[in-house]
Length: 127
Image (cartoon, rainbow, N blue to C red; front, side, top):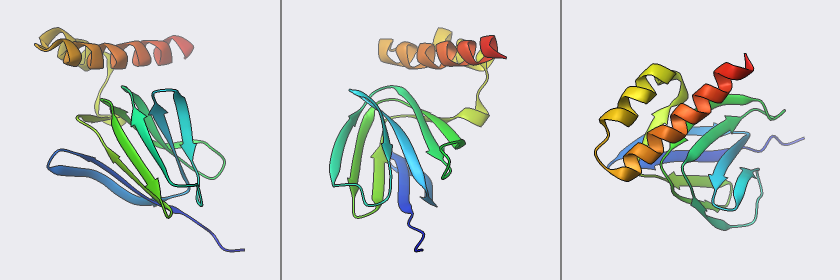
């Protein structure tokens, strides 16, 4: 059986944050989370602030990123995500997210970091 993968690229203005061959990607689309699998029909998705996840074949997260909106272009087993801001899940904690929120000048940056604070607070409450 042929093993299909998606060529995934996560970028923000002037910088590619991550490129990899992956089994599936879950995106925070405006209408709700969308999982991109190999051989998906071509799609253009509007993304919202949220968690982008690279998943294994069983659907378990391998990598997670907080993204600040954007678009995803999906075609021919490629998924290109363009976003304004990317924060790796492994590189931020609740304290740092709270500091970044409190230091933010623009309302949309406060909203972005508040989303991270909310997500991390929920994660720590589940433990």
